[in-house]
Image (cartoon, rainbow over all chains, first blue to last red):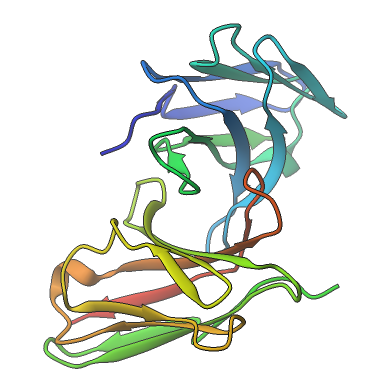
Length: 112
Length: 112
């Protein structure tokens, strides 16, 4: 059972465009992580957010954690082909202990 | 430094065979996790170790799945009498903190 819903599932854009992907849940999370996964590899941690309303920036990527700690968004400015990959959000809750609950991911393709 | 390593990277097993998947965590990481990732899905939690103690095995799908970490470092996930539905990527992650898990490249298991 995946508690986190990610949208859109697939996104194909051209280099230079901006995009936002969403991660939503009815559950409250103590922390939320965003990962990027490339084919044949494991997920690579991009960011962790722990405080409601928190905004973190990583170069062209902006991550936001909702005030109620139930949702998050990832915004990419001026996407590049190197941004192509599967973006996964994952949350830890008091019910899950140390286990992470993952969404199904957003598959992003950036074409030159 | 070295990241999480997993071996083998690919494993083909005939239905009914036993398999053993190995994970070498990042040195010094006390927490170790196993996840299962089916095609087109996000990773799903299987089990969690803190040092050599298996603190959570609630995600193991059946009693055919067994994991150990006898010396608090390397871990092995064993699947007995493999079934076709066991075909998936098995991911190992290690962590120093509750919030941030670092993943290995995974073992792709195909049961024929």
